Length: 219
Image (cartoon, rainbow, N blue to C red; front, top):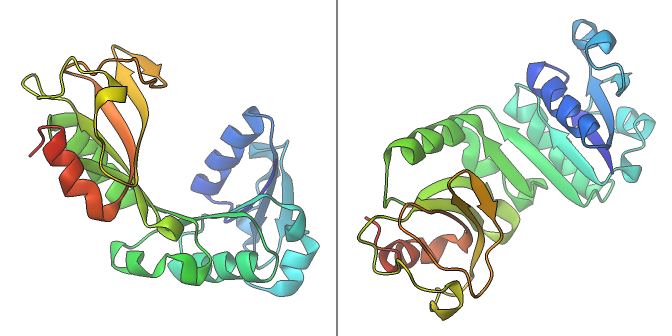
């Protein structure tokens, strides 16, 4: 998979390293010469250019990318890059970094964003997840489908404890995608049981979150 990352700061370079280690092709784009640190990610391609300009994205051959990551520290830049990637080059998957929580409402399909990642929201969610049992915690929003990645740790007294996954009448537009149990990641099947202490990961539409939390015995 070929991935273009707009913004070669610490965040962009870290994403690039992870993707390269997983066997993907990565292009880092930044207009600041000081950000072009080839020696830090030598296996990546580098482009000194303004990712908000069509000519730069033409040079980057963005039409050959399956994913574009807008990871700069400027929300305006990330929105413009996302919009151009989606509308001008038809990139299938656009992931954008949100720097300021007040701008979160802008990062949706209207601006070409498939997945918006808010660092403040993610950090606060992880804090909540660490201290809360029985609370539904939203970890990530997929704007195009109005779906959220949510997590809940099943309480000891949860009514679903011991029941089979396939026997539960889950709310509409809800998918149990993973069970984290004793350090293991389980891909759930209909015959797996739900046990107290399980961390359950769901993809669910926003309007059924309360129903899902009530079903699981959450707060």
